[in-house]
Image (tube, rainbow, N blue to C red; front, side, top):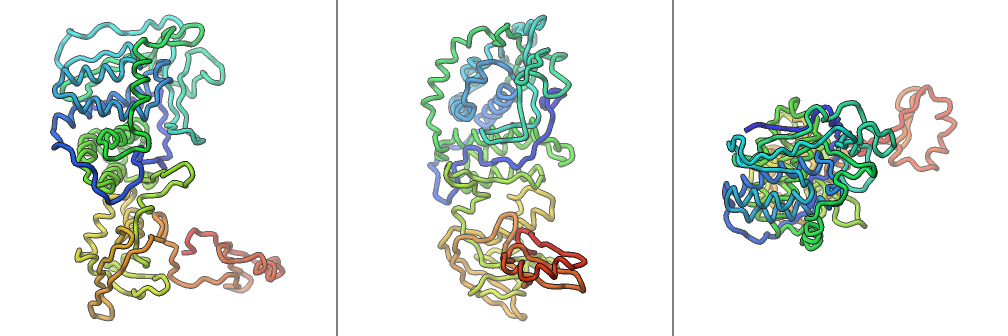
Amino acid sequence: MTSFSLSGPFTRLRLGLAICAALLAGGAGGWALVAGPAVTDDEVEALAAYARLYGYVRWFHPSDEGAEVDWERLAVLGAAEVRRAREAGELQTALVNVFQPIAPTLTLRPIGAGGAGWPDNRPKLEGRVTYWQHRGVKLGSRPSPYLGRRVIAGDESKERKPLFEGSPLAAPILVAALNRDLEVRLPLVLPVDQANRTSGTLAASLPALQERLATCEYVNGDLNDPAVRVAGVVILWNVMQHFFPYHAEAGVDWMAQLRPALRAALEAETPDDYRDGLCRLVARLQDGHGVYYAELSEQRAPVHEHAQTAGGLPIRLAMVDERIVVTAVREAATFVPGDVILTVGGVPAREVLAAREELVSGSPHLRRYRALNRFGQGPIGATIEVTVERDGARVTIPVTLEADKRGYFFNPMPEFELPTLAEVAPGIFYVNLVTCTKADYEARLNDLAQARGVIFDWRWDGQ
């Protein structure tokens, strides 16, 4: 099957990737999801076609109808309708019902149909035309350096002028396989009238679609609904398919990741299973900027990974001679620096670490560092037994997990004491900005003014 991405001259691939990998995830937890029927290969194949078409229409078909749609709700609605398709004909009908109100000139046909069923939907491009340009991808309403724009060729107004050189004018029609059964023909360039409208009036079927979207039950992303879980994968996969700039460098066949990710979302038994599936998908990119977080509400800050429900061990760890060693402990902890972790809950420590590393995107050393920061995490209040080697003897330590104080990006437990303000070499002063008060600073201001050099330490964790 042909792999097709629209990362061409009209898409500048700039993506900071500090992106919400949750995307409709609605948080996470350990409770059981409502079990559904067994997932079939045909269901996954149908959803793969839906996922690919969603990305093409949302980000590359420049219709006025597309600007009117709530794309997150559509992701859920479309997933629900496509899941009901039982064969290729029903799938084609479902896709047309979802996307043709947004892309009236979209056409689908069975693969291998030859010249049959392929109407001429090439737009007339003699006059004014519009097309998408993307400088990265902007998701949500928050300020972002990334931008997508429906450009009007020749229009120099601020809202419509090109973001950069390059356009799809030389190839205004996308023809691509969606799965093993269907292919799409979709205009990437559309004519506009003098009022900059792509069709004069919106498609007659759009109001009916909008009404269906208004009643789509996704609200806070109820993960008991398989369509919500699928929608998160569809959005995430497409963002990385079309806007992540380093597939070749990462050596990842991103197209091959779609079907396993869809199946994992459908088969998730708990919200944590679903979250882990999203994390594994992002981890394939090996980019440390790819981080899961959940926005639990507008009033609360984003929560990285699943810290809102997780308990953790009161320790800091490092890999020393291929062994997992305690390097710092929280006050009153029963661990001591130098303990070598052997097992957690009866599972060998290296297996626990490897399972955690699978969920982290980044280089090998970054994956290990962040996995160690989350090592031994579990539900708050759970009691686990941790076996360590201490002074040549095996010691079993029961631990009741409290709210995890360790960070995903760093563990604030200090491995050694740092001075607040001190002369560390003749004429060279060290100032710890985390602990230094205004009074501390003013008391040594004359010394600092006469110093040959001053080291200001404002590292996140002081390490």
